[in-house]
Image 1 (cartoon, rainbow, N blue to C red):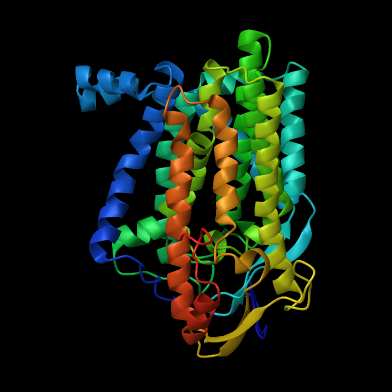
Image 2: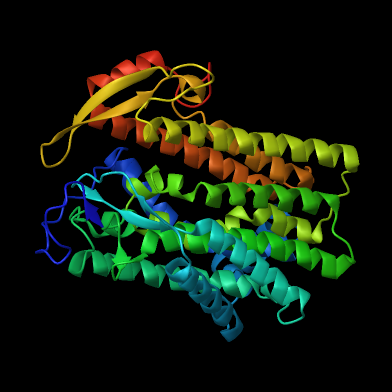
Amino acid sequence: MAKAKPSSSAAAAKPAATAAPATVHSALVTYSSMLALLSLCPPFVILLWYTMVHADGSVLKTYEHLREHGLVEGLKAIWPMPTAVAWKIIFGFGLFEAVLQLLLPGKRFEGPISPTGNVPVYKANGLQAYAVTLITYLGLWWFGIFNPAIVYDHLGEIFSALVFGSLVFCIFLYIKGHVAPSSSDSGSSGNLIIDFYWGMELYPRIGKYFDIKVFTNCRFGMMSWAVLAVTYCIKQYEMNGRVADSMLVNTALMLIYITKFFWWESGYWCTMDIAHDRAGFYICWGCLVWVPSIYTSPGMYLVNHPVNLGPQLALSILLAGILCIYINYDCDRQRQEFRRTNGKCSVWGKAPSKIVASYQTTKGETKTSLLLTSGWWGLSRHFHYVPEILSAFFWTVPALFSHFLPYFYVIFLTILLFDRAKRDDDRCSSKYGKFWKMYCNKVPYRVIPGIY
């Protein structure tokens, strides 16, 4: 972690902690939503897996099981206990990704200046790690060393182990934030639930180089998404002797999206997830458990429900999905290039329209930022969420509409991104004041141009 104006070594005295960020919603909404998510998300992961794999994708069948046996006993009956095989798979994968994160070469990348003036430093080697991971995984299968179908066969046990193991990991993060924060970008709200849920530290690290949020968000969460997408494809092939075009479209679009993510990983380090949200249950448990279970769920459903789309429909869905992924990427690329050149670039063939906004850091220093108001960012303040939601729809729609549950991820993602847009707007309003009002007057729509 570097300082904006380096003047002392990393061994300097421990800085005073900063207070946790204020919540955006009312106290009632904040506490009720936190407690609901803390208590409901873990069993939901298991219920979704059971419904997809053992209840034919039917929510009604799962409901009938719970009604027949009672909620508690019914849940206990379907909740698989973590096994040695599950723990070996998780720790083997996690250790492999941690080694790649530390040892693969990559360019030095500096993240945005933090509220206390720190500049996080990263090694941008995500694309290399992604390529090595997929080549290794497919190679192990091709040469008969490891069968990915084993992962699918133990999927419930793996998710169960992740649910419990990640809760323990979040407790570790809470304790670490209190006793050994990695930087001055840490602090307590004075409330145990808020500190556990939202996190204590902005940039927690183990040692100098191992960034915990890069590992949880990128190298475990996003990487497991790719690995499981391939796993579902292989499992269907082993079950049926072929892969349905619906599964091919789903897997291809997911892998293209994840490839885009790792190609742009350094840009992700400048987003709200990394630069503003602290490392707690919301981010870290979500990436360690919610991403591999919920984000991959359309493919999980298709394993036992192959749909033959036909060449024309399959190609149409594939091309529409690729277009949405490209627009999502181009939105982020446009903003990143604008920031990198300090506004001295071309946006859609013209000089960019912008607002020069000043703000004060927690240390009282006055700094400036440029707010882009043209290109994709002139359509709405968070237009990049529109193609992201549509991308998710297009890799889900190959399942067609026999069951509702495959579309849960699309609905969840829509709620998540709309809430994130509100939180980001509120944060920027507090940060930029009158300049944000000017920006909102120039770009009046939050997400969907002309609607919202």
